[in-house]
Amino acid sequence: MSDRLDLTGKEIGQAQSALESALSGISDAGLELVADFDLRALLPDLQEKKWGLFNWFPLEDGPACWRVALTPLEPGHTPRSFGELYGYDHKRCDDLFILVETAAQGGDEAGVKKGFDEFLLGMTHHFAMEEEVFFPAFEQATGMTQGPTMMMRMEHQQMRGLFTQMEEAVSKGDVEGISRITSTLMVIMRQHNIKEEQMLYRMGDMHLSQECESLLRRAQAL
Ligand SMILES: [Fe+2]
Ligand SMILES: [Fe+2]
Image (cartoon, rainbow, N blue to C red; front, side, top):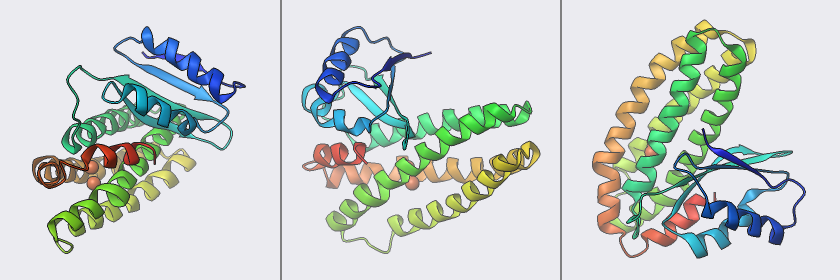
């Protein structure tokens, strides 16, 4: 279980200092940041001072509350790569997905709702990191615009359709429906992630080694 740092009511400067001292004692489980302002305001400074030491993923994205998961990385993650950061996020979203599935199987409606919100935000952020940053850079570097990225975009659309169905089932409290959709989604997600990890990210890391870090910083801030 990660520690929690509540930055509600703090000015940016105060929040930066509070974060800096919390990071010096961070546990392996990481730190959950909570605030009543968009926590992205803290990201440029954190990237500047601590790049390669932490992963940053949104858990809740306003309008009243923002939460971010900060997890420490093993030393030696510099230079960073697409395979490493995006692959880590696949694993993280898989874990969130399993929480939803387990809650659905146990008939835990409140657990399903909370887990699904975090899972949906995680997947939306992950797709944005690919569609807005990685895929365009990959296409430009390789000249392949009708190839694997087109296929991956189509699969994202297919998954978005299932997210919508899941959202409807969650809002109705239809846990059986959720279980049915998660089974289909799991198969598609697994196959999709394997293709990206075994082929696309590796090619991206080869072709984009020069600009990789600046692209990853941009992706993280989405
Ligand atoms: Fe993808
Ligand atoms: Fe992915």
